Image 1: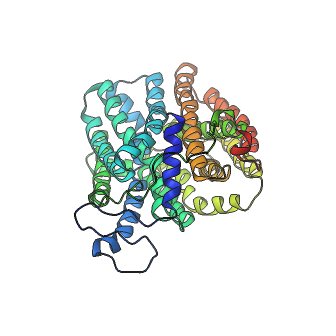
Image 2: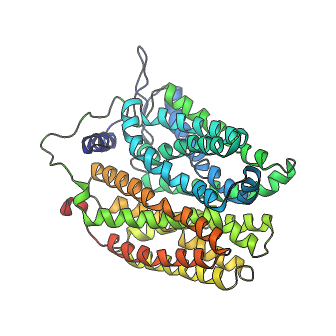
Image 3: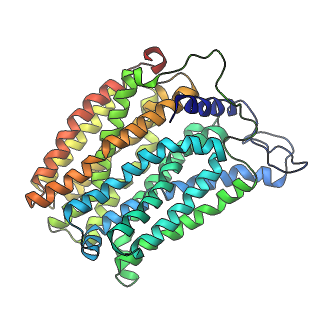
Length: 440
């Protein structure tokens, strides 16, 4: 994405924090009252912020089930489609690839159509992709439909913070916490119930994967209402273009931006390896498929309470490096347990990995703290997330290849533990009390 596009989006987002809520289209339409203000407004205007909140929660619930439900049934999918271990590893690498590619495109799409319309289209893409992929016929069709669903996840993932900041500028913390909690809840729910729900619906892995499309279809509804009212995050009140006299911010010149991008990429690598392969590690150790799914759910569910606690704690610290070290050490301890006694201490390792995976909200918090302006935050977020997801692509594929050729989990787990060391190091660098404007 061009720098001027990111600067424009950041300027528009910043402008909305000091203006009223966007106005609906149509002759004689009156502006909606922004959240938390007094005054007369149409009925739709009074309810619209609540509809946006409902849309945020429903969208967040849909940002991970397409991935974690596949992890819970990966062995059945591999057998059903005749996948090799390497190809299954490629399948687990598709999410970060789509997140990187479509993450770059999301701000430009939002400038053209508005974030509400893009999120609405994203939810529709998730619904269509999830329901089509089990019946697409062969591995190629499965991958193509998965990519469609993941594209919807990617653009929504990038634009949710923009919507929150635009609609609720004085409630960014609580709304971000609600969004993070719903995201973690959707992640853990899909991991926990996919296997038993599949059994209850007749035992077909195709049905077990396709049923999650219903949740995405429900999530389309509130965003249709938002789009109809033209109540998008970049509405008519937003300013257009970059500010005159403002020096361009070259994000690639900032060491902190690069440290954050690498930290984001390594934590994403660990997260997608966990979501894609951890159930299989437990199953190969003798744990039942249903219990393995619950263990993954426990790992993902740790993000529900910690998504509230960790960002608040990090925002009160001048240096977030100690938190990156703590989370990394938990990850190393979890990998050591998976190496030595995967079945005997399964619940402990699942808890430790869940704590370690909370590097994601820490990364998001540091992104918000490493810039002095909204435009800088938008640039840093797009750069760190897109570059980070590109960095994370080889990890799950390499784990699948090592698993297939070594015949066990010793080498893949050693790789996971080895990647945790540089993650800790760049986390310390990214956590320093610096601002990208001072470096770029």
